[in-house]
Image 1 (cartoon, one colour):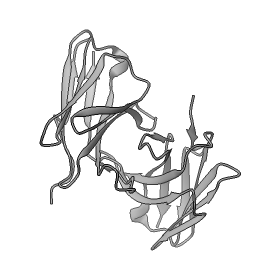
Image 2: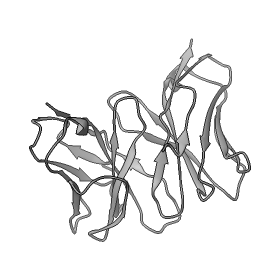
Image 3: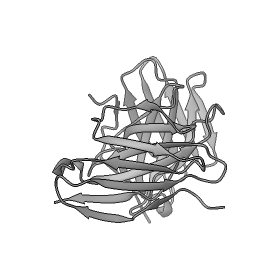
Length: 111
Length: 114
């Protein structure tokens, strides 16, 4: 049973525009959420996180939004750059440190 | 500052054999988690080690076992390998109880079972 879902396997965006990656979860006990970026032949790299007490967290070009009532989070990348092309995973978990990952969204930023 | 390292990079085993994968955490980290990532899927949590004890376990059979050493490094052992065990095995390290759940991942070990 997939507790974290990323329903868009791929996304293409023009350089300079906004990229929006979406993630849905089913377990209302999840209270911590993370986004990871993965290049081929490398392990996932942490990007940004958000706890359930917030609805927004920003770090440079990356912003994560959390809608607890909808059990939905999204990652916004503005402006998108070609180097952002990678697979993005969202992960959700409780404070017990066990995290559940989505299946990933492959982002392609077109120069 | 060395990040998370894993060995070997690639491994080919035959069905029924046993395999041991190794992980060294990032400097300053004391907690190691193991994940299995099948092709086209996200990482799935196997188990987590802290203070040389298994603290949490995901939905994996007992054929999957682990160990953590006093220097915080860790091993993942898989017995009686099945074809379905073919995957990328990822190790992630973090600091226990810091309220920061950011995990640093290694590059992974690609296991192929034939």
